Every structure is written in C-alpha cells, then in structure tokens.
Length: 400
Ligand code: ARG
Image 1 (cartoon, rainbow, N blue to C red):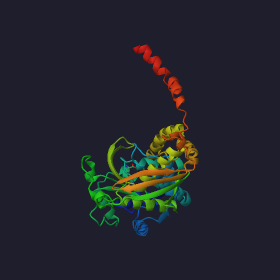
Image 2: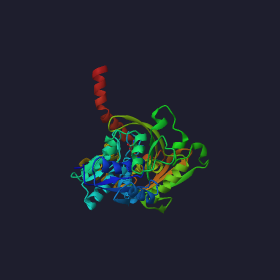
Image 3: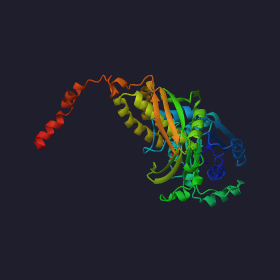
Image 4: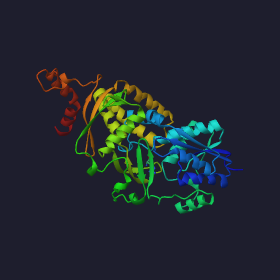
C-alpha cells in the first residue's frame, strides 16, 4: 500500500520536480501522477515542460495560466497593504505559493486525487506556504514532499533521475537557486552564502547595472483607483501588462534590487538577492498616495496592520481567518486611495516627485506659509498648554 493513489504534483520542469515523478511511483507506491505547471509569468516555455512531465512518467500534464489572477488577487492586494517583509522584501516569491496551492487543490478535486505533492526541501519557506495553503483549502488531502525526505545530494538526484530516463541538465548548472515570476526574481546559494560577498552582476536579469542606465531621467505617472494601479502615463493597462511594463521601465533605470539577510520561517537566517522592480515602485507610490488621502490616525494604525499582513504572507497564512479580517480593514481604507503619483527614475533611484487626488485631505490654505493662511495661530498656544500639561506636572514634581 503506497502513500497515496493519485497525486497532483507541482511541476517546474527542473531536475528536482522531474525526479519526484519516478520517486513517488517507485519509492512511495503512488499509482498515478498528474503534474501541474503554473504559468505565473516565469518566462519559461511551458509547452516543452508539459511534454517533459509525460516523458518522466506522468499520466497527465497540466499547464494552468494564472498570471492575471496572480497580479490581480495576490500582488495588488499586497500592494494595498504595502506589504514588505522585514521592511524590505516585497514578497514576490511568497505571493505565488498560495495561488499554486489553490491550483493544486482544484486539480486534485477535479481529477479525484487523494494527495498533492511539491518538490520543496526541508529548510525553506515555500514548503510551509504550500503545506499550509493546501491544508487550509482542503484538509482531507495528503501533502507529499519527497525532496523533504530523500537524502540525495544534487549528484545523487541527477543519477537517480537518469535511471528513469530523465536527462541530466544540459547546461552546466548554475550555483544559484533561483525563483522567478511576473513580480520578480529571488536568488540565493552559491557564492551568495557568504554575506560579505557582493552579488556578481550576472545574477541580475531584470535590472541594469547603474553604469548601463540612461543619463536622462524618465517620469512615469501611475494612476491608482481604490489603491489599485490602473494606468501608466494615462494608458490604461490590465494588471499583468501594467506590472510587465513597469518592470521594464524601472529595470532599465537599475531600480528594484535588494540584497538582504532575512529570517526564514524555520528560524534560519539566509542571504537573499531580489529583483522586483515594478512591485517595489508600486508599493512606494501607493504608500505615498495614502499619505495624501488617508487621515493621520488611519494611516498610523494601518502600519501595524501592514506589518502583520506581511508576516502572514511570508509565513504561509494567506488562507486564514486573520488574513480575511485584515483584508476587510485594508479594503475599507482604500475607498478613497484614488489619484495620481508621479515617479522620477534616474540612476538606480525611483522617487515620488508629485501626487494628486480628488480625495486629498491635504489643504493648501492650512499648510501655506503665505498670506492666505487660514490656520488660527492663536489656537496653538492653548493647544500646547493642554497637550503639554502632563509634561509640565511631571517636570515640576521631579525637577521643580
Ligand atoms: N526567501 C524568499 C522567500 O521565502 C525566496 C525563496 C525563493 N527560492 C529561491 N530559490 N531563492 O520568499
């Protein structure tokens, strides 16, 4: 009796997920393996991947286009939350996992599978996100993670695959572990494991080195409707097109790189290089528009929600009651986050240089230093008297 009868396996076409196919069958006694490759804009040709899965022994090989859903229901929600893990990482890889989990569960239900499987190892965050995402959506499904249990080195994995006709990687395999999708690239391992070693230029694909960026500044007007970016320079674009276009513009100016040490869910610190040009610019621009349109108290309160929200995404709790409750709060705050943000790109920088909204709470008659000032200057004294009362009493008691 095997661990499962019929399994839907998350499939990328790489050696590890390919080896999962014979491994699940031979070692764990799975009878039928259906692979699922999610197209989330990773730029791979999925046709050959689909064929490869069948050659590796899958009974069925699915390809699901999830780009639009990924951008609209995952990336844009995260932008509304200004979600940055540890204040920096815009969660470009993390956001893809709950959507892939959802696709796996849907396929498992459709094809009557009793388990789903993925190729994640035991040390990473992605296993947590897959396992919890699947569990939350269908607690009756088993989750199999062969690579978490087999103790094979890279060479042994390749050799195991060769026994079952899985060709070893043609290219000299890169020392890096790379994840890529529409939102960005995450690069780790190899020489990057030394935190003091600067990432070689070759790891970057979406962003230019500063030396190669244009000398002329470029301005981009981003229009948001209820906290969602809808147009660039007046041109209305769908979610995927907007992100792709902005990736190109920002990347061309060398914007969107991150080099950080982060705290993984399992407690390990890891060194990670990220490229996420559009996502980083959009969060920055969105946050700026909020500063124009949200009241002081909502704005300040929302920051703590954002911090929690980014932890939820990072730690694999996308499908959870807390996330749903915070979504309701965030959605409410976005009702008037509509307007224009002008971003200036130059030499690795993307700076917000202007913002405008019909819902701006900003009042020039109050802010002005000019003659038409409407602020009641006399009121300031009384305000400070009362605001400072506790300070005065405390100072007199302790110093007076
Ligand atoms: N550390 C990032 C995260 O947990 C990215 C991990 C992606 N994998 C990789 N091979 N770099 O979201």
